[in-house]
Image (cartoon, rainbow, N blue to C red; front, side, top):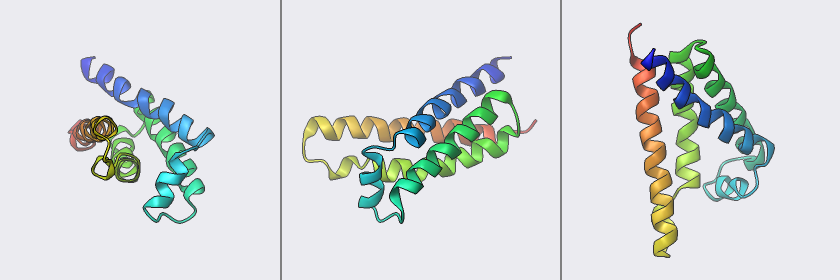
Length: 119
């Protein structure tokens, strides 16, 4: 029961944040363009939709290992494009982006635990 609760808690942020990215890509498009992604708005929206699908699958316990692996993949461009703390000269901005980068690293760890667990 605790493992299911953890999986639901892990999936919910992806549903919420993925929906935000897909519906209102906003500044994420500039971040995607800055790292050379083609069709940055389409990429942001598609990545957001993938996060919604993967997060919903985790919450619903539908192919959770596959969903978790897909979410790890979706975190790579999100993290590398959106949370480039090393590019910020302002200490507060750098610290904020480092926190987001590390948060995504932690989420990736949790997702890898789901993706590699045995039944």
